[in-house]
Length: 183
Image (cartoon, rainbow, N blue to C red; front, top):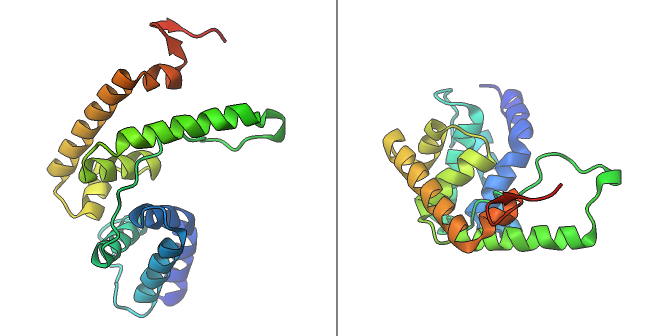
């Protein structure tokens, strides 16, 4: 594959790749930038070769995960389920109070996620945050698809149970005491 094509594909996946690198480096932005830079150098100098057996994004995430594991920095960060999916328009900008509440919910969610196993955290983050399939997550995690499915299902179940016990599920869905919150 040509260097120009590789550079184009790296540019197209850069934002998501940085997010995954950040996760692999436990939120350390400097370490994540260093990890991503090292991966790019490995790709461009031919030490890491994309052979097209998966999508470029899946392959790049696997390169990053293996590189982070070698460095001893592989994740203990949680999946961020409570996040904005659409850009906020200025007219719809949240109040400071709403932003604080969202931050508190995010922190509580991350605390619940830290109770999951490392594999469960990985697969949930790859599937929900990065939009990958379980098969692609399995490739990145270097486990069988069956193992990834098991971690995915167990992680979802444990997270659901933890959300129920903590009352956070009601806050996220806007329900109180089984009743729909007033809109």
